[in-house]
Image (cartoon, rainbow, N blue to C red):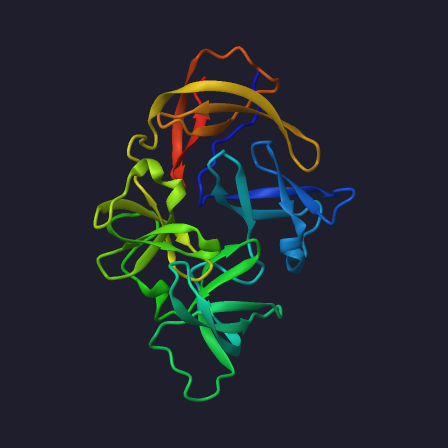
Length: 308
């Protein structure tokens, strides 16, 4: 049997969730809010990121489906009590610092303080000057993740106002560069000269070459205000159904001890991928190949759902 009230969420959707409980994990400093979605499913929300939201048990809050990872796990982002994505606000100006952005370039960022007294970084364009002291600065809220505001000066608009999240564009592979923790990244550029990074070991099966043109979807913002991209998969198409090699099933337990049954499959490139199921028991009698629908692509891997 499968669990009732299952719903296939899509990144970016907003739904009401009811906070039904709060739990601390014994022996750790972790605590979670327990949320119920409109379709009966349970979710956990780490409380440490939202102390300034004043969330309460029995409260109903709007949450965005912020991310569905490559194994199908859903991450929620509650609505900020003050700030909205895409809007421009005044922030208290603290100072300017240097930072290395997501493509390994040195740039400046402003340290600003929001209305709750929390400090954030705001990515600055090269044209931004501070020839006189500032008490405040206008910043655009590009994204909110784990309660943190991702900011940029409105005039820069992530340094590229021409590319829109959710749309596909052509990019060119220009370099392979070691970035954070000496990890190799592909560097790609758009038609306007803006740079983007992709972790090389996640895209080995794509066999990218220097100077190759690659079609990518613009997905979301980095913490530094630069856009993220996801290349079109060389084999799997979103929305299509394919056969995958069945490996095994196993149980996963969340921090509160709730069990979930997961199916492990292998794709055409030999990459192992988790498929989260709606099963209410550990089923093991699957055929050698099982049908899965490609719900999305993340970091070079297909996000799959079981086709019953």
